[in-house]
Amino acid sequence: MRYENGHPVPERRLHPLSWVFHLVGGLGALIPLGIAAALGAEWDGALWMLIPLLLLGPLAGLWHQWVYRYDYGPEGLLIREGLVFRNLRQIDYRRIENIDTERTLLHRLLGVADVKVETSSGGGAEATIRVLSVDGARALSEAVFARRRALVADTDDAPGSEGDPPAGVEDAKHRATPLLRLPASELILMGLIDNRNLFWLGAVVGSVLQVVGVETLERLLGPALLDAGVVYVSQLALVLKIVLVLATVVGVLLVGKLLSVITALVQYHDYTLEQDGDDLRARHGLFTRRTVTLRVPRIQVVHQLATPMHRLFRRVTLQVDLAGGAAEPGQSGGARPLAPICRPARADALIDRALPGMDRAAPDWRPLSARTRRRLTRLWLWCWALLSLPPAIWWWGWPGLAVLPAGLPVALLHGHLYARYTRWALTPDLLLFHRGWLWRRLAVVPRNRIQTVRLARNPFDRRYRMTELEIDTAGGGLAKRRVRLAYLDRDVAARLAGSLLE
Image (cartoon, rainbow, N blue to C red):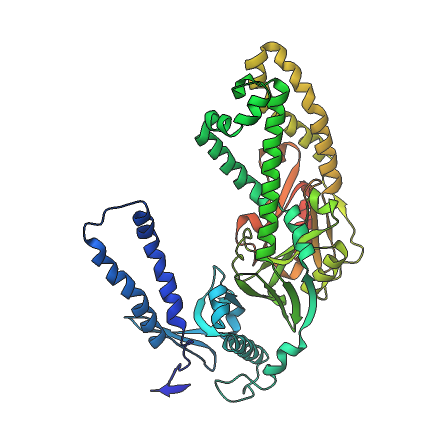
């Protein structure tokens, strides 16, 4: 790195093939034109308009590669960019929390990677460097974090020459400790457990059936219908109609599970989690290879999920809320996967790695308010009445009121099981909150990461003398990622809030 008029000027360049990826990205603008051409659109000699579009991608890529520079400054990572208006940015080393890499098939074919630099401000990547060689991306990560550690430790002179990684950084990758590796069998199991694709698949199937109509279905099932002695689907007996509906549902479920398994195998292929100092690094992906850095000091909350399918196969899922990082593709809120799937015993060990020094031994679990069962039972009965009574009375008249008692066992069961399995515990280091009985979720919150505590009471809470306590951390900026403890007695919630704010 050199200096001009006392100011540092970055000199490190992008990979020589960086312009190729700008060209590939620009070709996306030609997709609508290609679709129009395939559908037989008439151009009337307007094809010459494509020439500027074809030239714009390579020229913009070459110009970006020519002007883009980065380097390691004394206090932060320097980035100079801009096609027309040049600007020089400095990202303070102490604010950099994550440096992730992403490699698509083209990246892997050419031996390069995209680098995303995330800071404590959150909201996505602070800077994206496209593209560097694999060794260059690794050297960037190691150099930045080495300088960060040096600044945090208040050392005046970082070892090594300026612009080069400090001494000892090259051996950092040899100190990594493997924590978890998911074989293909675990990913197949994960796909069988996951149900994210079923909603979209059901919507697609419903749309297709709405479009093709009964006539198309009759043409597809023509031979089978003739063998059964009928011509139209409407002539089928009730039992055969039920069998046809069940077969459709089973087919949708099987296709959905197959797509879910394929998604898990592609997205989390060769998932490897390892620890390197204060970093947890996860690498995964078949076509697009991602390397995600989870800095242990920035982990705010650990979430453990056990759905009925998880419990059937004796597995759980672990996610973390990470300060200064956006969600990874495919995840909700600000969640980052710690273990997409693992056994409960392994999950306990990973939580200890993610929250070192936090004692979770034998927590004193406390129940919700004693009035929770009655409140939830009444709530479910009201919901059942509002959803079932109008159609029942419409079809059967006043005798339809007989469906109301049918919801009582379900309401009683839900109120009892929710109050039984939902509980909380407070230790000197942690707040633990276990919620739900069908979908069981455990939130582990370090007390020193809690930023705000809020007590809220709606009209129903006041009626039942309850209070909801909401915990917010640096990783819970999104409302759906905050930890909420509902159905607490008013005095219990007040004492708990006071203990958390001590």
